[in-house]
Image (tube, rainbow, N blue to C red):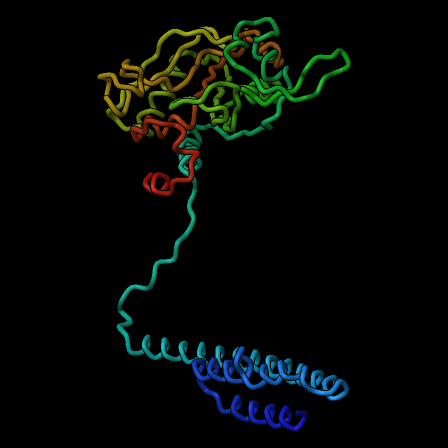
Length: 351
């Protein structure tokens, strides 16, 4: 038995060394390691041998089987490497004989999200008008989000901004930190820290606890603006908005100003842009009004200036705020805000 095993090993190794093709390698495996191979039959016949010869022959047979499996694995990897090298040489040869004037394969590249692209364009417009970009934290103190903007705790305007509060209380048990409900919190901070003349825009994410639909989400993007200087009037505000609308939406889009109330401005106006889908005729997106609200604006309330240490007798200013997400909706006629925050590349690539 031991002699037969040794001869089998030598024969198997010699045949394996001569194998040059993966199909022949599989035949070798079946012949020497398969379920019907001679080595397998010899292992099954060990039970017929005397106990001492069985131990010696069994140990040798198992060792030979392990050695054959190891050299088979090595041979398989070697043939795979040779095949890959041959394929590479074939590709290089084909490329050398091909038409080098043909365009190469396109390489997919990333791009900015449509919301980021929209903000960059908005920022470029306002920067050209003399504004600078100022950002702040998403988590804000109640004071800058409400109190400094003329919205005390009992003010009904807070009911319009369902708030995500942070699980933190002061020594009096009052909640003082929240996820900001508007980027106007940055306006309050800029009034408190900057000296006139001030011209800033303030972009960022905002959060409101409300139901989602085609034009509302719990997290969205806004940009606020602030200008404080001597002799600023409502005419300056309207001029800035008309110029922005002309440059962002196009010459033909109409802009509408209507009186509205916001605690931090007086007087206040609602700014709306003609619906891009129905062009003023009325549709589902605009609620059949022909207009879509862009945001709110107005002259900064004297009390807001006073809280920031600016004398309202000497300085006046205007402020505005509108949704960055709604700007491309109005521009391209997109009827559902939720499309921007999905993962459908067919939508994201077409803007």
